[in-house]
Image 1 (cartoon, rainbow, N blue to C red):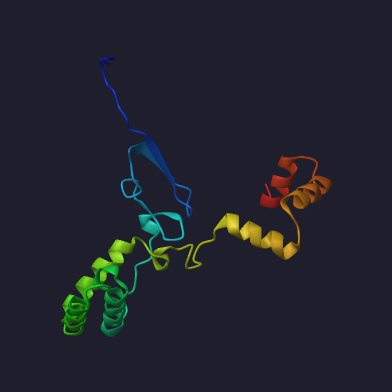
Image 2: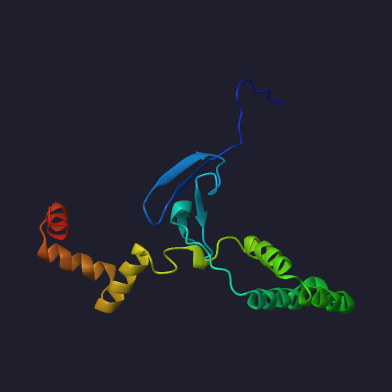
Length: 165
């Protein structure tokens, strides 16, 4: 049996880079929230300061979502009486209860696309925009590279032309 002296850790470092501003945070065993960031349902990592405030739908829309949740829940599949009772409960929730249950449901889903400035086209996903432009031009990355090689002698010349510096 080996005995280790001193500091022993099974921890690992994590790093998060904001897809909007490029800010990077890293640390040991750190999650995105400890880095001041969130990951939306489409996989964008975004600083919480860029988060779009989610607008709540009207009460009756929230109630419909709660009814759907009960209808689609596997828990109630073999419990029809409990399902019916829960549907009655949802039907008679006060406005505050609807909002509270809706908030719980939405927070369980994590950060949705409506909170992400990239998903809402307030900011650009550069990698996907590049792929879009390649498709619009009808070119592959390789073809674009060959074209750039034909126009510019070096990368610094290309950069100067693009950035104007």
